[in-house]
Image 1 (cartoon, rainbow, N blue to C red):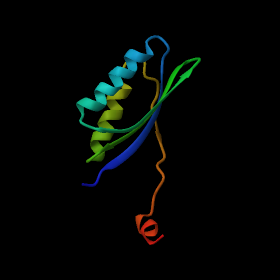
Image 2 (image 1 turned 90 degrees about the horizontal axis):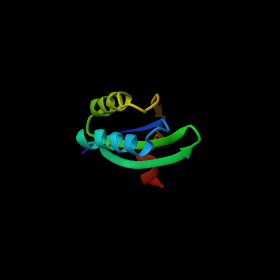
Image 3 (image 1 turned 90 degrees about the vertical axis):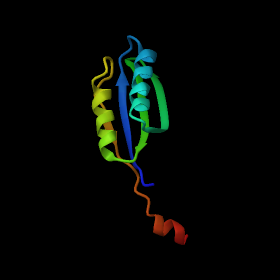
Length: 93
């Protein structure tokens, strides 16, 4: 089955970063989206979060981003560029 992947990067306000991160992960789980990678970094202004997600349809990832944006404590979300891998070239190597 083909999947669409997207990477999101955002900051969480310092008020309650763990509770906000838990709420963000609940959004991902409720939409039945695959969490492929998660990285958090503590910053003076809160917590920086990087998520790589995969879903069978791109619309689910867009909906996930919209719901994450509506969470209290989540600052603007940026979509990170994905590296394009040429599977044909890799197979030949």
